[in-house]
Length: 82
Image (tube, rainbow, N blue to C red; front, side, top):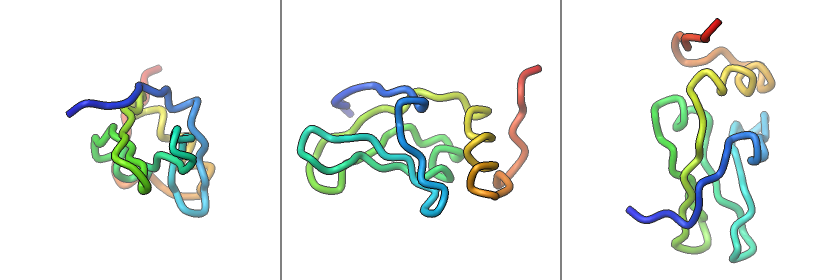
């Protein structure tokens, strides 16, 4: 599978209400991926308006702060490096 680009999670926008990360797509829409999909190991965000996809670069422990921001508990234990 070919992706348009690699994007760091820090460069994406997180909406705590929808629990979706987004990033601008060249077509004018936004790539989207849910925090739960990322927790489950998915790292490909898709644009709903075109065929482009990006790979999201993140570590699972990066998701903890976003779950906290959304006032949610992660679906399972996330090991955090000390």
